[in-house]
Image: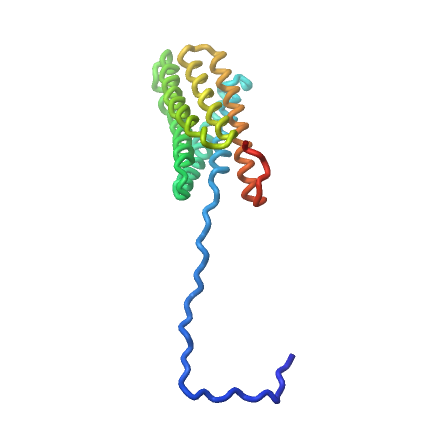
Length: 214
């Protein structure tokens, strides 16, 4: 509505007036996204593809080279980044898990590509077996720490520890059936990790619990 021409003019100031100093509005602190679903998804997908070969569901081992780029860039690099973000969030367990398993996948890619071809053909399985035994030890104590977490995480680390154990035994004993058991456990582990990742993404996106984690 137009102002009335009869509105009296404001009285003249009796003393000099100074405008209050203006301060720039403070931008809200940028939030840090939950990196957990990313790390779990990277772990799950890479584990799933490798386990298809370890279980014997894909018999042509020449095709297993498809795992190496996944191990380097998704299971490795993406998980490592997720672990670094968890460090910023102050989550010791997730930092240790994601950085360690990210490094596992990157070291696995390097081991298969550069080290295995240099090992004596009849003894490479021994090196691989002890490589996996070391990761079983790490995963076993992470599984103990995970007892403080929800049921889904407890299952995830328990199954992962068994996966490493059976794969290691399969290599050390040259009993193919043990390696196949490790492969099927790896498929189960990948499924659990995908489920936990999906639960995290859904909760962050929907703003509420969607899938139970126990």
